[in-house]
Image 1 (tube, rainbow, N blue to C red):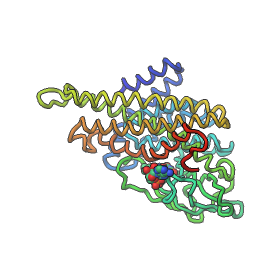
Image 2: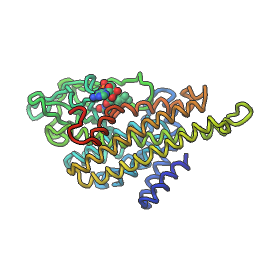
Image 3: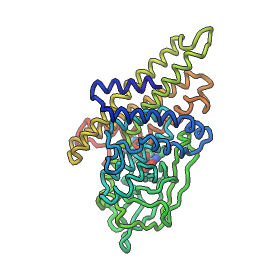
Image 4: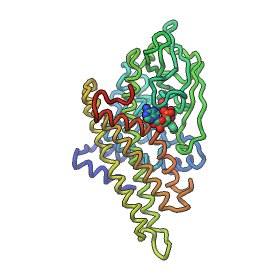
Length: 406
Ligand SMILES: Cc1cc2nc3c(=O)[nH]c(=O)nc-3n(C[C@H](O)[C@H](O)[C@H](O)COP(=O)(O)OP(=O)(O)OC[C@H]3O[C@@H](n4cnc5c(N)ncnc54)[C@H](O)[C@@H]3O)c2cc1C
């Protein structure tokens, strides 16, 4: 495990020299991952949300990697956050999903779109694990087409009054604050992002536990019934909620891709160990050529998943310096879609190969590869399903006029 992670750093260090501070952050991510491994697996076996993991992450200071220092973060780059998250992904994607929403979709959205009061109020607390964030875009009837969402708001007595249902929301039942995307009842073309206090009257939440993976991550349905939200909780401009949503997804997709690299590394480490200890037909299975093919394929997958993801993170940094530059945004969106599409397919394929190398034991939640297999499947669905990313990639390549939908 150690060797592969170090390899990523060494490979990248030859391109973009890391500072001592950056290397220390990655060392801390390494320590957090090691400390998290046992409790994460224990909770996984019990199909229980793991609330110990965020505490360990906070202890090692990794919840605020890309958050500016004045808001309690480490002020580091997206690339360092991606490398840290890669490490976490080796444990499966339970905590990785929490991290993606807390940091990439939640805190980074507030950092980009929030006013000063909102940044002061939420960011330091999020970095310190004093509050949990969720990002509620999807609804029962609005998934790949989030702009068709039905959750509505009315303006009443200086407040927004929210009604609707949000579905499949990561951290949904453990969040303290939920970024909710809703449509104006008065002006239906207007969608806004609102920060909703989860304790507000009218918010009810139901954990969705019948998942086929991600057992340590909370996923929930959220009902909003006449929920009053103070006007100061508007995130970004009124009517510009989809800008907040799409910019959040841009961050989140790179985060998903880096978790996928972790899945591939985890798969590779597991098959290396297994193929050097399991004997069949009188020799170690690692000496059978067809097992070697699985190992070679997983190693190739690692190489193929890493570079588009690191490149997308670097491209994202250019875009962040000049967020109103349309060409940089298009390039960042293309790179991000490529990274997520490539890394998620390779993660699922690698975990599948790892199960194959483990044989019957691999088809068990008790084997580390069983967890990687179950968790990796969702990466081809959440934060932009494969098909949606394909359409995005094709339309970016073909240019204006070739969008498959508007
Ligand atoms: C564990 C988990 C956690 C999640 N966490 C969050 C969260 O924190 N916040 C949040 O807002 N959402 C979250 N989601 C929701 C997730 O983002 C959606 O599931 C995803 O966007 C797909 O939407 P859908 O499930 O409604 O599928 P649908 O939109 O119904 O799509 C079904 C199929 O049709 C395809 N399809 C749809 N439109 C087209 C088209 N135009 N052309 C070709 N194919 C198309 C899709 O690619 C897919 O294969 C989560 C989902 C899961 C499973």
